[in-house]
Image (cartoon, rainbow, N blue to C red):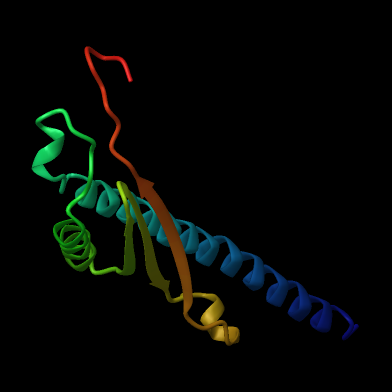
Length: 130
């Protein structure tokens, strides 16, 4: 007679965990997509900071200080922490987004930090050809 109650409690707890994994897993994926999107856009912003030599047909180089500042401004405007590294004409951005689980926080799962990375490098194009 009383054996159904413990079974129902176990099943209810298991369903709550599955519900939490679905809801909070979706939130984590959304945070990861934001981190990657912000990293790509910040890298693109930095890549726009080319020196004037590229216009004259010389090699393409990025103004390091202006590029880093542009990427950091974009990260700040998106309310995302991150780092910007510029080596030669390649920009590397790492964006970090915090996600706080809603359902799984009930059982002690705390803040999760997800990371998105992106690289940007200018390409020489002449009449549509690289």
